[in-house]
Length: 474
Image (cartoon, rainbow, N blue to C red; front, side, top):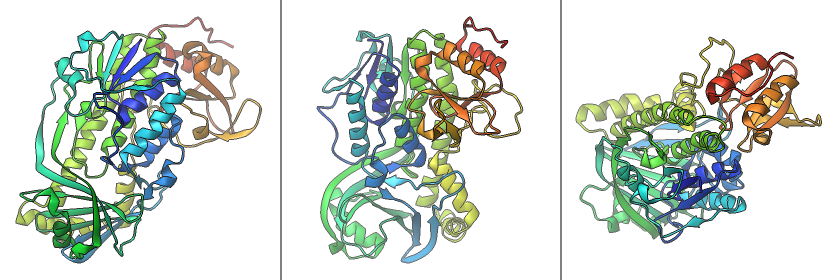
């Protein structure tokens, strides 16, 4: 066994799928007795959908989720702003709310199709005891892998206790809108969930008992407590802001909540973990298959840790804003910041940022550093492009990824260079429509490099730290 994945949540399952699709032997274990059935995380953003699509696990999840097209913000009983999450040139489909359990189920089905099942009831507390070349801790905020590896997890609590509950409620409210009430330093969020009259409640718990959900609902929203007809699931948790000191210690790596935790505001947690998994999977696959040195794994932290740090900053700021600690903060929130969310420019910025489609690694160690004026630049996410397969049939770039490298080129020599370095079984060759320069696209959808065969050779030999015997002159 080459890789042991610890934790069968979305991050661990996505990593396992990416590695198995690349032909890497793995084992995935989890301390739980079996799959979770409660909803937990519920936001699947466009970036998360793209990751699942590339892994072959997306299926009908978008159709089964509840599309979120707006966030209505009420101050007291009055709607002050409606943040409309309209399509933009970058974001062409809405995010959805759906149970984390549904995402995990889809990933488990994909993993089973790749020939691997989760081993349940298998806690890991000592990474030195496991027989694996590489160990990846995807085992959450209290990661035993992280603790055993001695990796620090500094941070601070943001809110002492938060209450979440999934309820059935007959409400005359639009089901494609997240509703948020602000009353002084109280905040009450209501999120539509798939299923008849299903909603998620999110609010600071304070001194309240979890069983008081109906009364809290009425108190904060002004709607009748009798509207809640069934309480399906309730939980409480502390909101922390923490970031691991390092994502790698020798042969141990961290991903998802084991590496970073933050406020649930904005629904970024599951999507950030999926991004970690996809970024790590293709790099670890190259290392395990002996196509590069282990130093490539250091680029995982270099690219992903800044993304997590930015998510921590954004979600912490949003938490402090929504809770409005202090009279001045509440005054600014209710009369300045919230009304700004009605502005189209603000709405576009929030839509694109929350989608995570603006994530770029152009300042990371794998970007070639050239001052390329045209987009996409190395490290950027590559938009969907019109291409042709080898047989001349039309296709789109995003339809052809499937966890593989893609080279879009009319230059057969450039294609041979990529296949020689990366392995022909790991590369899809597409023909561009007129006017598209040769592009080498990473398995996670970001541009590796652009240019001719010589530039492909220079980039690949530099990244993989070993030259293949490929003549660069045609």
